[in-house]
Image (tube, rainbow, N blue to C red; front, side, top):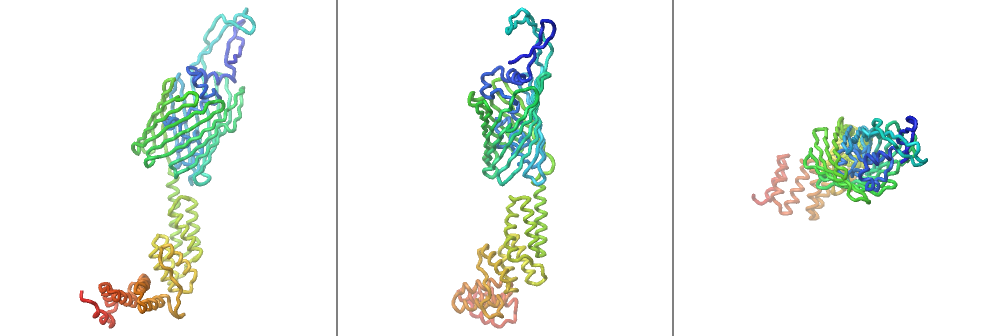
Length: 546
């Protein structure tokens, strides 16, 4: 330890800390003196060590294993990439009472973007301790040069130590399942009248590996650092890798981190969180390093009352215990609620455009909704459907019966009623049998519904598609293919349930299949529609009595 002597009175000099050595002294005395050899292996006694303590009572209760979690406002400290998960404005506060009258505070505010998927945060970290004695010593003038001896000592007041960091962080999702983030930190430290500062930058990434249940987080702290003041310190690069996983329908969260600072042994952190109820969660954790093994054991809990969560944790270590109290407040409208509302508005506009038959506008509105929420399965399906529609039928805006039927069929299609879609679109096609694009779209939807494809008319040119089906049904009966005849008639009845000709032919097919019950029912329906029909009574005479 270097000492700087300054004149106090003749032959008496007062000793104080040199600026570049003050911080190392504070760490050694304040934090590590009782276990200096033990903790030197773990920390390396490096500058900015107070920034490795952690942030948030919740994460500290989990053994500071949080790089792969980072789903609350403390992500500004642990992993700025995790800010992309924040959906509401969030404020978190931490007050930690440590050993030797030392306090540690952390405050963080996060604001997500309106569309979600990104957020910025502002945080402050502070370590403070006071009550250190200043000591004055009188040097013996007869002592040999280089080996001074002291004749008296006296106290000369007290001094305090304070280290703090203000950080601005930003994180966003760049592609599906991958987020990145950065943090810029202004670090200051003071010992009595000595002070210096540093500007540093951190990088982080968070990778979703299993639909939100498993995540991998990586951070690199102090990738850039610039110090000012009377100091020769350099900020060490610190790398941290963490994994989190959820079990039992996401009630149990487990996390494991490994960190490595320059000139220090690798450290490890393991912890978990279990939701006993919607409002109450219990937490546990352990921390250690390669050189010393287990360093700390942590336990805690969190209780949520509406939008406010109260957190408590305690850490047990060789120096005694550390108590942490935390509060988190989530406020403002959720990004998810706002996004869902905007998506619903666009979908409603798309349906309104579909009712007018302007399918190009429908596609544009659905694409805008999908841009807002790329994970919305319903919007994905509707967008894919109308991509098929626009390729064949860009619009159906006329008042003709065929256009009206097309609009009706595509509304069925948007609502996933494939049977109604096919029946109505077939009717539209029968009204306009020369519309090959409509036929192509109809065939695609029939394939999607696992139904037989509609074919263009094969008979005389004046035959309508319905005439063609009637012709095919009669031909099938003559050839003994009664099931085919029934299918052809059913296609017509899907369009017009009261088509007398189809009912007669279908009844004949069931009669020939010896199903007199169904034949009777169909022919009776014909008489209900047309009581003057003269053929049906003759047919019914051939039926077996009921």
